[in-house]
Image (cartoon, rainbow, N blue to C red; front, side, top):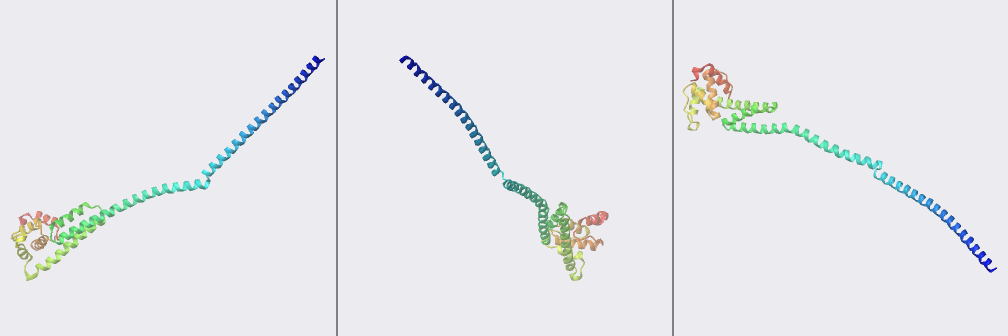
Length: 240
């Protein structure tokens, strides 16, 4: 009987452990399933949160207003740079001729000043400048300068040569007899044309031009050396 009780007791224990095992296994399965579902849910939520945060960050970084401001700023900077270069190029292209004109006018005025001091080199420099400039206004200024200066010499020496009622040729002889002229008083037309061609004293040259007109009847303008050469070429014996 005791043996039967022990066997029955073992049977009950076995049933108890078996039931407990079934419960634990079932609980484990349920727990695992719940944990798996929970894990999946957590991952999905975390992913969703991360995605939302990323979207928010991107939206913040590339906000429409911010993008517009950045584009406008970049465009303004680019346009500003291009505009500055265009303005610089336009100013340079416009200022260069003006700068050259100012420089040339300064050189022309300097040549005029030397002419008025009696230096033939001033006249020669002025004529060189007239051949070098391509600016119409500068060329006109140079021509006017030459004309006005020549007219002043004409007026001054025409008046002075009439003093005493003598001929202009006689006046030239007296004027050229001064030691500083470096010339002997001319005795004929050849001597007059030599002064016109070689003298470095514009005052003496101006008087010689007046004497040339008087002796030839030609109307060569003051300091028109080409006109004198042309007349002498056509009247060669008289200029020798």
